[in-house]
Length: 265
Ligand code: SF4
Image (cartoon, rainbow, N blue to C red; front, side):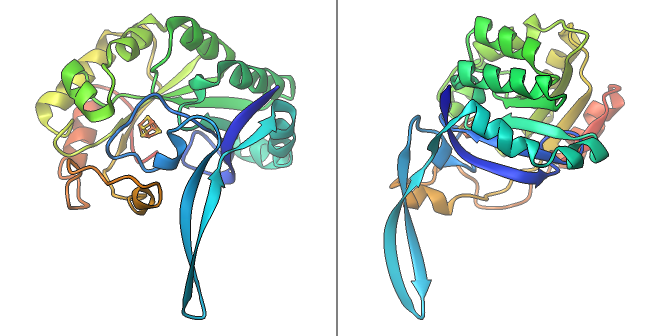
């Protein structure tokens, strides 16, 4: 079976435990205004405009984003680093875009990895039908699930979609074999107030699935140059600064509530 992938990154240390390969699947149903990989959002193979300068001369060329590849070919690439995974308790992480947007392709790769004894993680926004979400959660060792805001309208404003499906999917989890890591990207003006963070904390305290760890991801503006190359304008909502003032406060809030918290992914 073939799917559309836009990158396979080896030796990653930010997408789950140990040393990992991260497979980025193309396409995402959300449009987060801070997205660092806007080229990953559209489904299928798309184009990005690249400017290259050599000896003072600039040339502009369109480059494909994404390529069609078989599940077996992806897994063969992953297996090249089997020794690294074994020595570091690592594995493979399927990210995106939104990997749940290509469920059959994803599920097939998860099955193949498990047949090879490779630990799997899926990095998802949680925005998928209950059926797909449940099938993936049952097929992977670990879920890295983003919580952006618990506030429905704010979520709609920030990502283009309401968060009802995401919250309901999170609440549906109750699997003792699943490692759940919650990722909270701190977005100034969206979720970096004490009130917003407390609401996210309350949500996590109300679910049945144990949370292994909470990752607080400080805000940064990486990837903004890509918007121009895609013919898009960076969002006017994006604050013009790097610092996320409440990172420490966020960490201590979740820490005090008994969660294991890590800054960064
Ligand atoms: S969910 Fe991730 S990939 Fe999709 S738009 Fe948001 S930040 Fe980008």
